[in-house]
Image 1 (cartoon, one colour):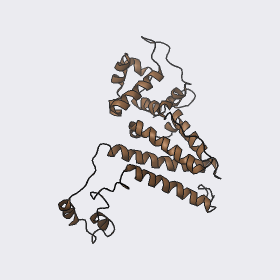
Image 2 (cartoon, rainbow, N blue to C red; image 1 turned 180 degrees about the vertical axis):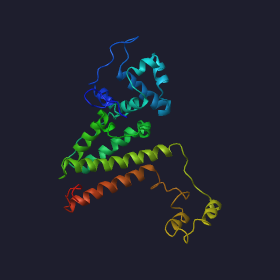
Image 3 (cartoon, helix red, strand yellow; image 1 turned 135 degrees about the vertical axis):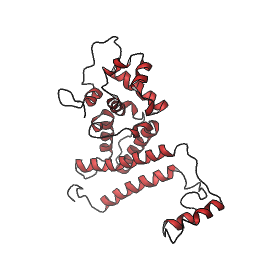
Image 4 (cartoon, rainbow, N blue to C red; image 1 turned 90 degrees about the horizontal axis):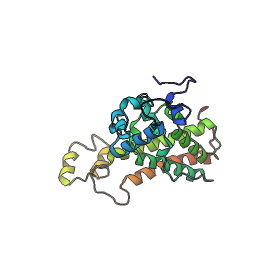
Length: 257
């Protein structure tokens, strides 16, 4: 259950936007929501999200854990405040461009930069509360700026940037999972062994691809192999698909189709 303020706002949202009053009493003054969130982000960046505990965070700030709970209700609220911090956003921001294709790609690349710099963001569950946090609203605003010239309703523009951002977060998750793992390249014996069970008869489409070395374990192609080419291909596919739809004159609302 989400903790709410007297006005009905989720407490994390009010804290993140600065409308929630800071505690005025306690054993020691000097602790603020901003300091707590900034330090928590530093710990997550250096050691991962699992290292962010209330006890460790309090000790690193020079306070007791009980003092910390006067500012942050629990770890879930802390995590929301962390992903809502505008400090996560890259310093180099997407610049509005007349061509929506260029603008949308720049916006997508900015999202990817954020996930790459702070991969722990992908471990935190997002939902109705998180989209109201400062970082999320800034991201949405910049996404809407990128597609402002498209003849769509506001809701359809939101749906469009949601589709692109979902691709970016999914790809960033894949990048995070693959980080540090070595590429597989099988020798003839290994390929022959798997070739006995991965056959064209059993798998008529994937089988031949594997046997040719084009799936996993085959020779690496320096020109096409790598995460960057896969990322570019997927993003280009999305943007070209959208462009084809509008070039064809299909401007119908997704909500009415």
